[in-house]
Image 1: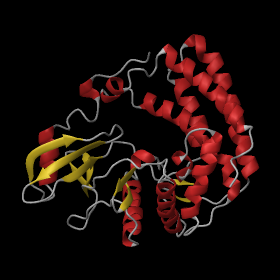
Image 2: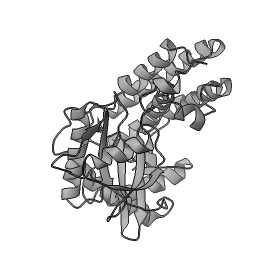
Image 3: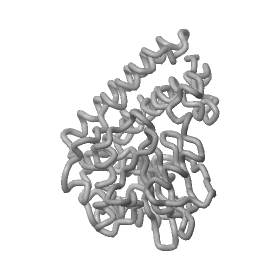
Image 4: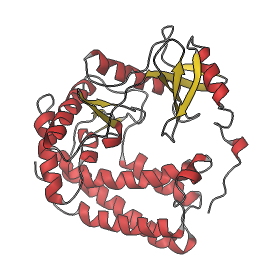
Length: 331
């Protein structure tokens, strides 16, 4: 197993509760001492009680991950969606700025928006969710991202493979099997992209799964655009699917019933569903590896980087290789 650095070497080591409250105080928000760490690993996110006001959410961005320009481009995209009354949670502009700095930490402040997990087994919920994703994509098509990256087989697949190999995460006795399987999987991804042909790309949510959709009696709202990037529309749809093939066919029909009220869908993108799933699996392993020096990660993901973990990944990718050669879901 790759050795971790110590807590004091990690960039979040100095982000104490006092630092969080002082950062908010620096932009005119006086905390009342109530501080609740929310479930986030990539960044550090806190619900903060505010004197004479409603609690707010403060996100402290992981140092070195995004440039200021890329973060601001995300903020601008979400603000653009909010202006069209699409239910998203946009960063608050304080003194005319959405991105702030305190003691080397970059942070943004958001209104607190509660909600529950959506009932993705309910056709009406899927159609309603699809309708709002369609509205997001209609705006996403208007102009491209300039600063934020694209979701590509190179970025999510080959770079993930290379990082894991170069940094010694794969156990020596599994290295050959894992490498061969990954290469076969990436060949399968390439075939899926060839079958899909030249599909359009647009600004996406990028990580649009049930955990980033909160439901209230007024319907869904979308949170956490931190992974927003350029890619095919299907990237924001396939993570809503689950179960057996028949289940996914029905779910996709329900989603598209709402989606296509606002945005056309190119059915050739269905060739990319299993390819994108494969890329996400590789990217996820590399993400855990890249963050393994963060003390929060070994505590939260103790099963990562074990012999069993990598054995399971080989089996998982072999299943994906077979799935990528099956016909796409019909729409």
